[in-house]
Every structure is written in C-alpha cells, then in structure tokens.
Image 1 (spheres, rainbow, N blue to C red):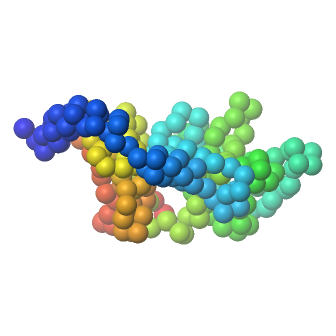
Image 2: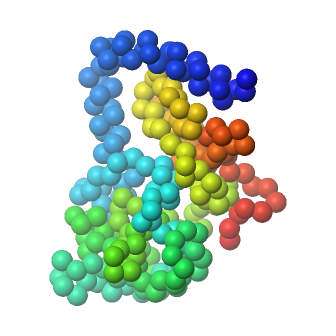
Image 3: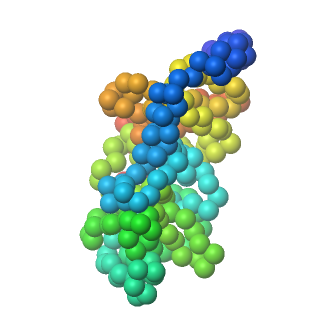
Length: 233
C-alpha cells in the first residue's frame, strides 16, 4: 500500500473522532483567525481598503473555466471614459498564452478605482495575468485575480505554472488550523495558513502545483530549476 493511501486511511480514521471533538473545542480565537485570513488573503496594496477576496491557490484560479492566463507587456493606459463608472483600459502587447481562447488580446480592463476592485499596472512592465474573459470577448482583471510582474516570478514558479493544467481534476483543500486531514485521495492539503508557514519562505501558493500521479492520487509537485524543459521565459 503506497504512502498516499496510508495517509488517507489514517486521516479518515482520525477525522471521524476529531469531528465530534473539534465541534465543541474550536475556540473563538481560531474562528476569528480564519475570518481574518479569508479577508486578507490575496489583497493588493491599492485595493486593500475596499476589496476582500476569498483565499485561492493560484492553481484554483487557473482552473476556473472563465479564466484566461497570459503573459503581456503593458503599453499604455486609458482611464475610463465614463467617469468613475467606466473601466480603466490598459493597452497591452500579448506575448504568450498559457490557457484560454486562441486570440491575441490588445487590451486588458480593470475597475476604475480600488472601490471597484481595480488594479494599477506599470507601463513598460511584462506581467503574468490570470484574468476573466467577459461575454463581449474582453479580458478583465481585478484585485481578486492574479497579476504579477513576470521578472518577479522565480524560475521555480514558472516551472509550476506549466503543471497547473494537469491538476484541474484535483481538489485543493485549505487548512487553517490543526488537525487537518484529507478526506479524498484526489485532495491536496493547502497548509500555507498554518502557524510558521508564512515565514518559512516555502509556500505551496508560490512553489507547488497539485497534480494527479500515475496511481490516481493527487499530490503536490514542487517546482524546481532543472533543464528548463517546463520553464517559460
């Protein structure tokens, strides 16, 4: 019996007992901590006062059906033409498509201000975008989506990006407090929220992808800098 199945069986055995205990034992402090994490995770500086976002591993965002993932360079910005109502338009040079429709986007849109979950991009910088395709064919990105300067991504993280699509049939399960166990062989436990993990520098959100192995179980794959086979430049 492989390690993944042993871990799963041990977790199932313990979770039945722990469920009854934890239902009564969960403290107000832990409850508040979870709410704070839910509110703070994924916020960007310019929208932190206005927008709150549910915590999502980047792979969870990647696997959503309306999400388009591209690398693009910001060329210019055009503020909304309808005052505070209209979106801000960024002209872009579409460089690479990692996931999404087979078309080249000439622009990406965002909210006009932080209250509308808008983001601020820097002209001349190349970004990784995980934006959302709208019904009219335009691409939009908000504080709750993912946008990061390409040069700020480590080579290991670029390697992980190439594996995200392999794990879209897996489930990433957030773990906010001990005990935390898998309830399915197709789950990966996301433990970045546990005490000490944020300061460790090795976070699953930045360095790991949840992928399905040959035995049908889902497990974390860590991005590494190797031959460059799966690394995008």
